[in-house]
Structure formats: structure tokens, C-alpha cells
Amino acid sequence: MKYEVVIGLEVHAQMLTDTKIFCGCSTKFGSEPNTQTCPVCIGMPGVLPVLNRKVIEFAIKTGLATNCRISHYSRFARKNYFYPDLPKGYQISQYELPICEHGHIEIVVEENIKRIGITRIHMEEDAGKNIHESSTLGGSGGGGNYSFVDLNRAGVPLMEIVSEPDIRSPGEAVEYMKKLRAILRYLGVCDGNMEQGSLRCDANVSVRPAGQKEFGVKVEIKNINSFRFVEKALDYEIRRQIKVLEEGGRIIQETRLWDSARDITESMRGKEEAHDYRYFPEPDLVPIMVEQKWIDEIEASLPELPDIKRKRFISGYGLPEYDADLLTSERAVADWFEEATASYALSVSGPKVVSNWMMGELTRLLNEDNKTIEECPVRPSQLADMLKLIDKGTISGKIAKTVFEEMYKTGTGSEVIVKEKGLVQISDTGEIEKAVDDVIAKNQKEVERFKAGEEKLIGFFVGQVMKLTKGKANPQMVNELLKQKLSA
Image 1: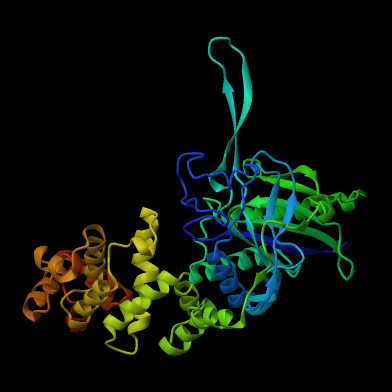
Image 2 (image 1 turned 180 degrees about the vertical axis):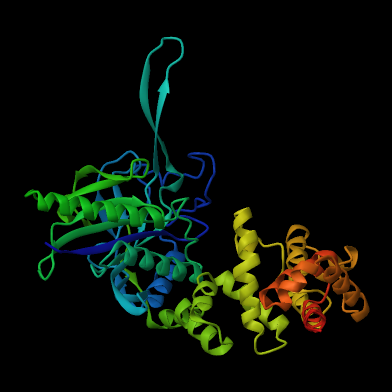
């Protein structure tokens, strides 16, 4: 039997605010445990939350960027459950009246555009973090397992972005996550750092016989924090469910965890329903009233988003779709490209030349150092200056790679490096002719083979001349002189 997969994602994005959602504690990541807390975020009796206005602004921004309807009236609710990382015994979230609803984003699936619906975006506070460690007690020889709780994260503002069950494969789920992450980073509302947990997702997945309209029993996989794990966890869970059904079993509605060490999902608990959380309107916070004027102001402040920028890069710069996809995946990369292109701007092919260097040498060096474009020691204008030296014939394309690597290591400009290291391209006909004659004289067997019809040997001769001149000879002049002399 063939099965169809049905997937919906609940993405949790920590907002890039300086302070928490209901108090003035810092949201900075990486501080000593429990040093960024106060009576409000650790749930002491008698405290009252005060809503951070920036949180509403960021939620509206995200809603507008994902084509949602922004609610003029919304409110918070109490979601009751008991875990050590939630000291007050409930989470302040939104339930029946979220801030954003009925949106969508588009992804590319096998060169076709597919629309993934967004059910809702709501605001809530994050919980703390449980840390589980095994320890051996000294002296007595006894041992035990211990859990600790760090409440620095408690109260950090979250957006929960809930998709419609429109996703039909693990690959589509990853593309959806990547597109959503790009939008959030373009907006500046979330840093998208999945390793630090500022972007993570819960996946709801079910399978059903192909052609069946009713959904199968869904299973939730909690807290997946990388694109690779999203794909692997969904792939495993789909195979597990199909195997259960084919063996005559039934799928149990439950919450499972992804074990990345063993590449399996494991049962965590039975799946909670809304009534298990005993939602009711949050009595300590008034409803949120959003005027249309504020929504219009936020919409006017939105940056150019990835899809629009991608289309402009194709039509305006004449870039292939592949280049445009990569260059617009991150706002900082797109900005770097545009600044370099504006500084270079010597010909119609200029944008493609800049793109080639960015996707080639620049990306290679950044990946080797595990750096982002924001940390790049080469400025866009410096790349443009080096490309101009190639156009002038001052350096060859081969030497340019050496120059660029030195620029990256030292931050020094290309002209200084070329001058200090004596890398100026040889364009003197007499000097190149002497090198060509030397190579021909030392390789008579290859000369005879070339004259006998092995014309591909021209590459061998060019390589020998470039080696003799330490890569400084003008390649075009070398090719022309070799062809003349070898054909004589």
C-alpha cells in the first residue's frame, strides 16, 4: 500500500528583544545560570507581569511578512502544566485569540512554487532549561542522577508559528523551516541560532493511505533544533508509522523525542490536548488593542524580504536563479553583494563576477574558519578593487586567488599586497616570448605530439610557462604566442 505523509510544524522563535516579555531581565545568551532572573520570571507569589511593547511589534512584523491577518483585539491566556523549568506552574501564552492568523509562505519544491499555510502566530514566554547530568559521589562510593534548572531563559519572549498540515515530505519541512528562518532574520526579530535553541520546532506527523481524505493519527516530535535533525527525525518517524500499520498495529497519539545519538524517536508521554492545559484568560494582563495606524507604521518599516529581493537580483542584476537563491538566503550576504557590485560596476557582467567570487573563494574561506559574512575581514569595496586590478591586467585571475586569500588573512588591500609581494602580471612581450621559447626547447617530444594533432597539449605548455613565470605571465598573451610558435 502507498502512503501519504502529512506534516505540520510548530516553530518556536525567541525574539531579539533586550529584555524579557514580562520583566526587565536581560535576554542575553550564555550567562552564568540563574543570574538573569527576578521575582517576576521565577514566579514568586504576588508579582505582576508587565508586557514588553517590543514583543507585540515583532509579532506584528512577522505576521505581516508571512501574509497573516493582524488581530486588532487579542489576549493572553494561562496554560497550566507542572515542570521544574516553569516555576510558577503555568505559562503565559495565547490561546483562542492570537495576535496573527491565516497567513502563508511559499517554498520551491522541484522547481515549482508551493504555498504552505500558517494557522496562527502567537506570543508566549519561554520556560527555563532543565540540565540532566549523571554524577558519582566522592567518598561514599555511591552514585546518582541529578537534574538542575537554569531559569535564565524563563520569560524570554517567544513566537510560536503554527503551520497548516500542508507539508508532504521531510524535504518540504526543511525548505519551510529555511524560508521561515530567512524571513525572521531579514526582519531582525530572531537570530535563528538553532544550536543555541533560539529557533526550534515541534513536528506533527501522520501517514494515511494514498487517496484517503481523513488524516491519520498524528504523533508529535518535540524540540528539534537543526535542519538535519528535522529531516532525519521525520524520515525515521514516517518509516516507523508505516511499519506499525503494515504489521497490523495502530498508531498511538503521543509525544516523542528525537535521539540524535541513535537516530530514532522515543516515546516521551501521551499527547496533551487543549483541555489538559486548562486554558483560561490571563487575569493579570489586559487584552491587547492594536490600532490600524500602528500596523501601517510597522508595515511601512518592513525591509525588502527574500522572495522580492531574489526576483530583483534575477531581473536587475541578470543573475541565474541559483546565484540569486544563495545570495538572498541571508540579508547580510545580499547586502555584501550589493555593496561590492556598486563598488565594482565596470560592466554588465560585473554582478556575475562578484557572485562567482562570493560563492567560490569567499565562501570557502568563511567555511574553513566557521565565520559568517558579518565576520568577514574583507570589505566589499576591497573585493571590487581587486577585480579592477584583474580587468586592468595588473594581476591574472590565478594570482588574484593568492591575493584574495592574503586579503582575507590580513585585511590588507589588494594593491598593497600586489606591490609588497611583487605579484604584478608580466605583460612584456619579450619576457613572455623568452619563457615560451624555453618551454618549447625543453619539451620537444610534446612539441612533436602537438604537431601530430594532439592540440589539447596546449594546456600543458601554458602550465609550464605559468610555472616558469611563477604564475605572473599574462595568460592570454601566453596562449597567443604558444599557438603562433607551435604552429610555425
